[in-house]
Image: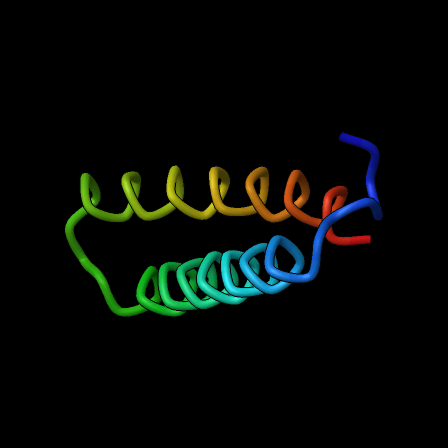
Length: 63
């Protein structure tokens, strides 16, 4: 499917996914500052990087 050729409901679902991934990204990024366990911090950083990748992929569909 070409970018920009989404049906209305697909556009809305993509928008919802973008919002969800953005909230996940922000939450993980903010929580890293108050977490002391290094393993948990590493998992959160991995989640941040994956969320950034996911957001970029969704933005291609959304625009």
